[in-house]
Amino acid sequence: MDKYAVFGNPIAQSKSPQIHQAFAAQCNAQLSYQKILAPKHGFTQALTEFFSDPCAKGCNVTLPFKQQAADWVDQLSDSARLAGAVNTIIRLPDGSFAGDNTDGAGLVNDILAHAVAVKGKRILLIGAGGAARGVIAPLLAQQPSALVIVNRTKTKAIELASLVESANLSAMSFDELPAQRPFDVIINSTSASLDNQLPPINDDVLAQANAAYDMVYGNKPTVFMCHCQELGVPVVMDGLGMLVGQAAESFRLWRGCKPYTTAVLTDLRQALKSEQ
Ligand code: NDP
Image (cartoon, rainbow, N blue to C red):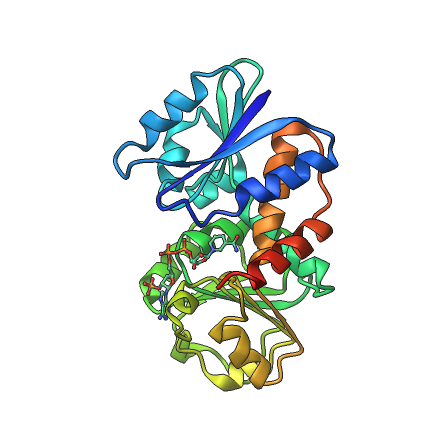
């Protein structure tokens, strides 16, 4: 039986085994998918051990190991190279390992699935951490008219914007955001919602958006989502669809079969709601 896994620390919270078993059922595949808690200083050893089994065909990697995974693999996809981070490792037929980053595809597919356009639109990306880094190239590939990165620590936003050469990409601080030039889609890639905090963004900027996305998800709408709803933003989304979308892309890379995500997302949402 083909073996897959997700490595992280912590990892107990991971929904990936449920998601991948649902995809496997759809594609009539028999596979195992386990959570592996790698020691903070023992990730590559755990990875090498896992892949010493020839049945191990691939794995996902989550915090805090995505950068180390990028160093470990033999080759990187364009999105993984730009992100400097790998969330999907694929064992190739010649025994070498490829690293990809499917977070951006997961985000973009989820936004588009909500009938929210990106092409030709002004997009604001809040945050400049690992999650933001992984979505820049896939967002730019959708040809927005502008992609602006805004971050609490402005230097990080500038650094991130300098990684890609694009006339449509820029960086600024929160107080430089132009209220008179509205953004169509605002994506919160910060971890602020995990602490029940809002990024320090002006309500006038938020209120003019047609859609808002929080990469964080939980058993109820995040503080950012609630705030955007109160301000009247018509479409407000959380990151659960991104999670399922990035998993679907990993599954396709491993097995060549692109699973449907809608039913899996509905079941996961239901299960999440019943969690305390
Ligand atoms: P990092 O630690 O790399 O970056 C955190 C970012 O959040 C930084 O830009 C930081 O700003 C900013 N930030 C944190 N707290 C605040 C605050 N109170 N106000 C303003 N900005 C703040 O984390 P990641 O980028 O890896 O992950 C960010 C979030 O994205 C996580 O919550 C994670 O759960 C989520 N995520 C969701 C995925 C999904 O599939 N749905 C996939 C990947 C990530 P500064 O630089 O100034 O410190």
